[in-house]
Length: 346
Image 1 (tube, helix red, strand yellow):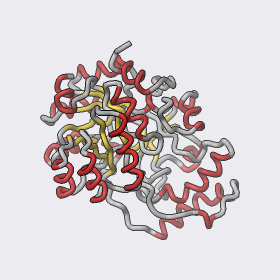
Image 2 (tube, rainbow, N blue to C red):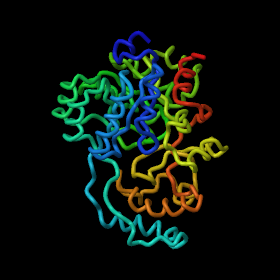
Image 3 (cartoon, one colour):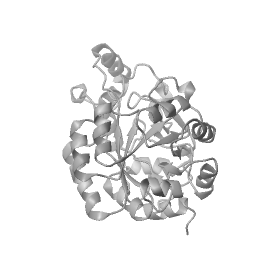
Image 4 (cartoon, helix red, strand yellow):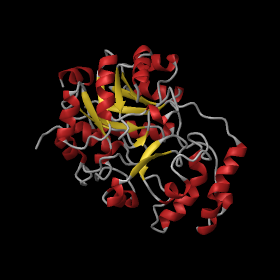
C-alpha cells in the first residue's frame, strides 16, 4: 500500500477500472473522494466532451484521478469485409425492420492523439493510463512532461516487459477474468491470455515496476489475495457497473443482476477486438469470435442501429453486456461504499 500511495497519492490501493460507455466523471469523482483512484475513460469522448468531463473532475475533487485512453492503430476500411459483416447481420435487420440506409461507418473509439495531449497539458491529471499499448514516443513524452504518472495494461509477461522498456511507470496485469476489452497488443492470439492469479506473480517477478492486479476481484478477500501475491494495488470494474453513479443501461443492469452474469465469454462481435461480456443472442448465434466482424473498432457501426432498435423493445440480444467472470460484487451500492468495501473498510 505504501508503494502505491507514494506513486499515486491515494489513501487506498483500489483503482476503479475505466469503463468507456457506462460511466463519466461522476464515478471517478466518487471513487477518488472515497480514497481510491477514480478513472475517467476518454476513448469514446470528443475533445469538447473530454474538456467538459475534466473540468467537472477538477471542480469536484482535489484527489488524484486517472484519465484513460486507447492506443490502437485505426484500421483501413475494407469494403468487402464490411459488406460480409452486414450480410451476416441481414436477417436481424429484417427481423427488427432496420433500415439499412441508417447504418453508418467509422469509429466510435478514438486513439490518444495530440488534441488529448493538449488537454492533459492544461488539466494535468495525476495519472494517465493506456489500453492496447502506449502512444508514440513523442506523445508519451508530452504526457510525462505534464507531470502525469503513466499506467498501462498488460496481459502477458512479454507485454509487461515491453511496457517497462517503453516508459510505463506501473503496469496493470489484466487477467483473463476481466470484463470489457482485453488490453493485449503484442499478439492477437487469445491462447496467450491467462487468469489473474497465474499472471500476477509472473509479472511481479519479470519487471521492477509496481504491478496492479485486475480481473475477477470483487471483494476485500480477493483484493488481499492479490496484494499478498505482490500487487501494489487492485483494479476493479464489474463491481462498479450498477452503482448509481454509473450510466449503465437498465437492460445491462438487469443482466448483471441475473443468473446470466455467470455465463460470460470473450467475443469480438461488438467491436472487432476480444472483450468479455455476458453471452446473449448474437454471441450464441454467430459465435463469439466470428471472423466476419471487421477490425476494431469498425464492427460496432453495423450493429449500432440494430442494437438501438432491439433495446427500444427491451431486448438485450444485440448489446455488448460487458461483465467479468465475477459479478458477485454487483450490489448497487454507491461507488464510495464499493471502494471502501474492497479495501476491507466498514
